[in-house]
Image (cartoon, rainbow, N blue to C red):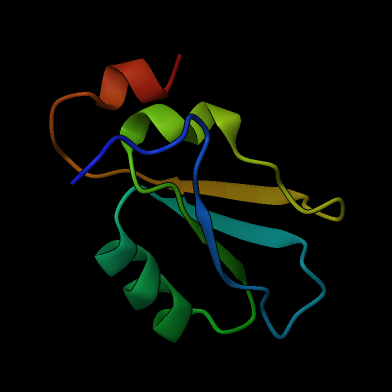
Length: 79
């Protein structure tokens, strides 16, 4: 494993809706579960808690939900 580029993320799903709702998860597993549960939403996996503040949201985003893991480092991501 090497270091990821600063700000790396994966846009897993653009959603079947109008891209107004965006779900952001740290891990790929959580993001995949969200994509299955909410096919109408855009889903982004940040791959690291430190990448949460660097993602680019879709222009039409109106509703942002951070689906945070319950582990250490969460405080850093929310700053």
